[in-house]
Length: 139
Image 1 (cartoon, one colour):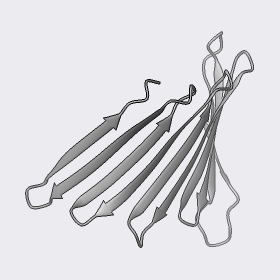
Image 2 (cartoon, rainbow, N blue to C red):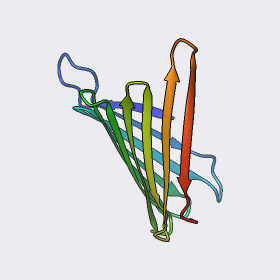
Image 3 (spheres, helix red, strand yellow):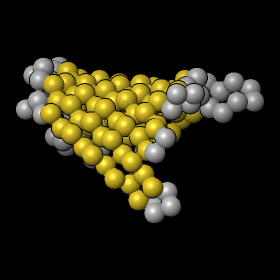
């Protein structure tokens, strides 16, 4: 696996990172390239996988953080070797005693599944209680 830092402004941290690797040769060989780019409030990560047969699959993830509201959003889009697409979108919100996290996943067949987490934490007891609700999409 090789790592290459890209585009660095003077006096700042690197704003991007490229990772690349190739699996063992043969019918299941692949090459994966990951490009991560920092943004003002998060990052964007693009992953491309190319199979030995020349098929391409991609993953595009955008993560943003809002410190003022305690919110983190993560939106991920996938395209498989067959060209079918899927997505997973998540919003996490910090609360006074824990957090909430809502996730919506849309599969390649268009079916939608949701998952909701409400976490309440007791720092003194060093424990958290989570309530998780799932509404499946069957794919």
